[in-house]
Image: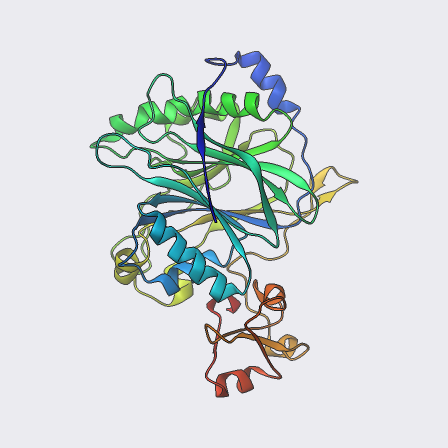
Length: 358
């Protein structure tokens, strides 16, 4: 079932700077159990024309994803259905109404792995009283199931326009939006993710940097036409500036992981690479998060590790998962589970290894 976000107004135009500063200094850093949070501009997702298998391979690396440029709710549901078949786990999905100016409109969406994350409430499309944003951001409250920790994700796709000057007003208005998030969710962690269409060190972010910082400051997320080439660092996740956490973050360069060219990726998957962060368990002694142990692009488990447990295959997708792979535990609960003693046995039965196993 697709949840629908509803608009909600802001009771105050802004919060004074001093009050906001105190508020964000007092944000409680709660424990989260290595939930993989990602943001991805999926590039004009309609109900056809995409390599859905490649799309779900990418999405399967994460537990909750904010997606931009959803053009069709049917296309979104097709992706979710394929994702559930591929991973063997149940996924939730929530989409905003179509947002934009004139005839061009997009949906924001959140997808989450239900075994790890629960959608709580507060799906809100920001009511932009000054009409600065072409596509007003969407926020929602989620809960990490293992620890019961609530967190807020906000997603935005900043207008690209004809020049940098078209993007600047929206970037500058993000500080006001951040203040609104603080007023609306004063007791919880919140993160702002999306395609900002601007490098994070641009001076237009100055207002936002009073309260927040980007988790990615190097590299690039937009795919160049030549394989291996990336152009701009437009996608990011912003976190509270004074958040005392050990964060593992990165750019998921999916063409390399999936073994496809940039030309094919741009045409059939997306011209943006997802960005992600992993917040792991809080160390009660230091008051900081312990380092996350595995990144989405970490080295696959060795063959000797895989032999320690059964090989779990999906009888519907004909894909098998090794112990330690992201979807291995979820497959144990799948009605399509097919077990094998070794990877060789799975391959002999016509199955292939999941790409996110290495």
